[in-house]
Image 1 (cartoon, one colour):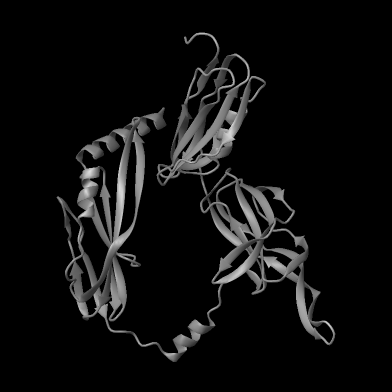
Image 2 (cartoon, rainbow, N blue to C red):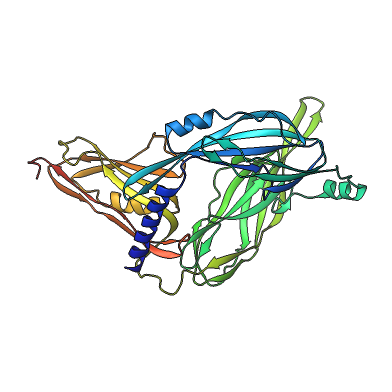
Length: 419
């Protein structure tokens, strides 16, 4: 009840904010700087990013009229060009609101030493922020600093440049009682891998661990700092932390046998090759992460899903003819993990002798932050079929509350009259 009241208050605040906020807005920032104030070496090029937000086609027209400045204090104007656009959509009380974001990049060369400013910029009735920056002398690099930069090693996991292991987590934010995937990948420049075996598996304290994958996957190519590596997943674990706090995932140990081609000149056959094998002992890198608490009032029916999102459902036709397929759609707005499996459980669980249910690959282009899951449902017999509503208790990390996400269910009537 408390969660529903809080959600209602949030919706009211969002609606009131939408009535009072200025629709067209412009924000400028120095590219690559952590704040609006930055130091730039003389002679260097840098950029100022314009981010324009509009909510109508008229405002988009105003945004398209923006011009490059004729001059910028202390700088030479080099270029001014569009830098990508996107559409953000949200639903409030069932009404869709679209925000169009248009970016422009102003490229400059720093010329005059000293403190300078740029802006504010007027666009229609909207006014941007003001930027302050400083142009400084070029810092001379000592031989010691050059030596350090030349000797700086690149983190390629544990092993050697030709063969190493990496461990990755499926989520950057971990929570107690919520499973995540722990994946070990093998990277190699050798011609082949003929043997792989774990001697010691990584250990996880205060966790439930399920081994999901032990057979190495097929190799794929991945670029690391310009080097093309063959990569294979050699381990995949499902890990569920039992309590909050520091989680230490210890090192693992494995033996790897590689195939290496050796070339030599034969007096009769010319240049030929043979394969030699080498054996390596590699360690899986250690990972330390923080497991966040979900609080002491975790509902018994908690779905295990974490995210800030909204969910809606739609049926193309509730009264189809026999063997006439209909499309069932679920649209997810926002960031969420593991929602697809929950939707599959509901929809595919309705599959019986009277319905044929197939997953449909959606070709529709959706705005950024939206996902659509679709299914073909074909009635094979006359009757009334029910698609249950989807009710999920999820944890929203933005509000730090447990919330109930709902998508309505449907009845499919095949044959008979519409009631």
